[in-house]
Amino acid sequence: MSFVLDNSVTMRWFFGDGKPQEIAYAGKVLDAMKNNHGLVPVTWGLEVANVIARAEAKTLITEARSTEFLEMLEALDIDVDSATFTHAMSDTLQLARRYRLSAYDASYLELALRLGIPMATLDTDLQVAAKKAGVKKFAF
Image (cartoon, rainbow, N blue to C red):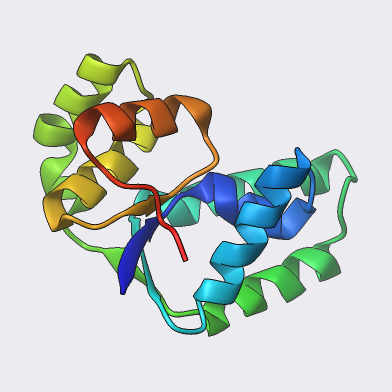
């Protein structure tokens, strides 16, 4: 089964912080990656890199830890959607406007809607928008 993987879940894997139910959900998504296929918009890589760079700059993590994490991500079955840019200034923008999301968050929603697949996210605003738009939450 394919699903859209939001950066909020990815970063829980990295930092392991948050509410217990969020950590548990992120862990279950990671376990599910063994048998499922994650899809991400092209912005996902930039978001991952940005969070890592900021955390390193604040000395919250080491470059060695970041490298280990990036190697783990590369081993997962995650594909980048090449059509994200094509939809950015049309469908994604409309979703950002409608649901008051950042364009980055709206790109995850657009991808899930376009492909008709569920989404794994811990972002509250994105969860609300997905529910309103009829996108199911990724479940195991």
